[in-house]
Length: 140
Image 1 (cartoon, rainbow, N blue to C red):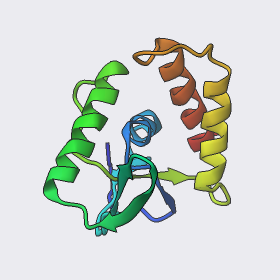
Image 2: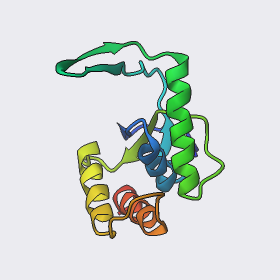
Image 3: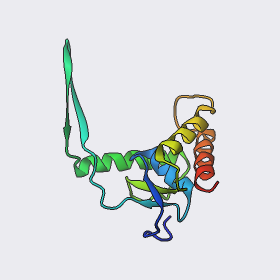
Image 4: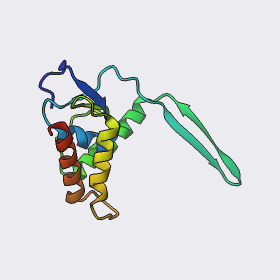
């Protein structure tokens, strides 16, 4: 996916989940790359106790946590019809100057909101909405 990993520009981190990986795939070669030097975000743990308020804390992410995250990303991409996914949990995308990650999320969210809601696996319409929204932002 990366033609030049050192390419300068407005590189923006994507969420560490299936949608972030789908957005990286949609951006295409030269516009997405694995994030390097990333310190993994901690994992939030919540203990729910009947009749008492839950207790929450953060723990360092373990290799097992990374494996679970990667498995969920691979599963999400497989639902989207992408089976040759790189084993990467953290991606970044090259956006035009002045465009932020929040702008990209708004455009992607708006595109997905136009697709009829349905429970279950991703639909082709949802995948198409994400792909088109990302491509419209990356190469206007």
